[in-house]
Length: 94
Image 1 (spheres, helix red, strand yellow):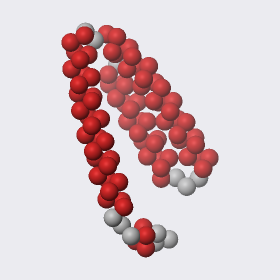
Image 2: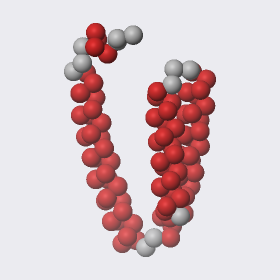
Image 3: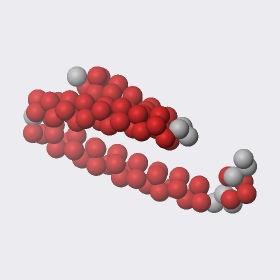
């Protein structure tokens, strides 16, 4: 179950990345809807996984997820700062 959930997370991320890169609005919407579908599947599967775990393990997993979210938030903030550093004339070469 966990491996399947991980694969779905990867697929969701792949579709979101593709949606960010496409310029066609219809294709972008289709990709985002597909990513949303995978997100719902992951949430459903995660509920099943969580219901199987014992309470001590749940607490450890919740703590690890909180740390991972904090780290990803810090990485996102750093990447946003990097993007701001480029002047318009470099990013708009087309």
